[in-house]
Image 1: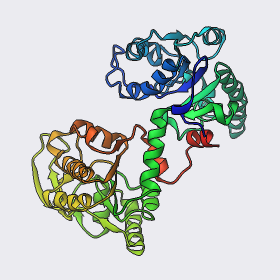
Image 2: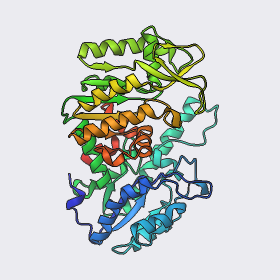
Image 3: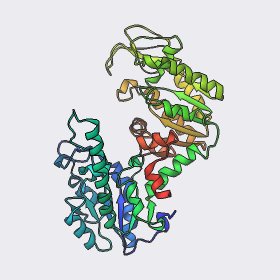
Image 4: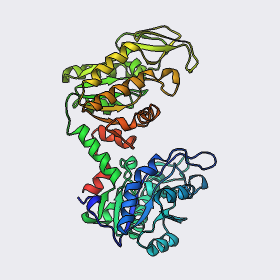
Length: 419
């Protein structure tokens, strides 16, 4: 597999799949340009070599062309960050895109309109009636899959090589994230710098493990993390359960959790996971105390209590001080750390202490030589909120993609390049 570092883009047009799915306010101003900045090294390398990047991305989840999700809104900022005036094609396929792509000169860049304006990008039919029959659904799916081939072929026709730098969509087998790679030979398709870093970080955590290996799994529901937890039980030395999942495990063990978040239909599953951890010799670390509140609000009355003795009209919104110490001791003695999900409702300032203490323990372990990977939207928001992003080994840009990689799944966007 060719590396972007060693590839010379001089005189070549490169179709670059990026993830410019950035948040916009009501006036279409970008409120967080992290994803755009993450792709700059790749785009600047192509330009510096004398190549021409043809930039493809999605924005939002449109059901067809709409100004709300037009990439035109970010064109000026992309140009400013890249240091060149980026051209724009009002359509990602069609005559205008083809003409502008063909006319690109070395050192020039072109941004295509939102790829998801076309159903063919995702390969899913749109506009089906709610009462559509199974036969109609199958026919619509077949039709969009057939037209997806032409859509993909058209995108590929603009360029001499393909660069995937969109880890956030690597778990999707979409036209521009995976299928397009088939139109380029092994010497002309590659990961961008961001993708390379993401792939190496995941491999380091999942394959090249320095022990002890500790995973901190937060989040509200056990059901959304089952596959991840089960895969991790075969790899980690310590598994810390945090966030809303805490109370499902606590209730399963016979504890009183008041009106805390719980999945009553997953109590048996929680007990099964506890037994699997024991059987595999994994240290499953659960909370011992909680910061509880009489309302789901930053201004609620609060107090601390044992996690299994929460009064009826109270709910756990964060871990307590004893749990903070317990988690920190495990984390600080680790050599590989994966953090996915906060310990509580960190969006409320009165319930940030647990997540902050976990972050501080990870920072301390990292300073002592551990490799730490933080991923998943809320965990990333945590380290950014606490100013810790540059004090951990790696902060992943991929939410769903990272989680599926942790589950042990093959990501189509990666497999298409490595094939």
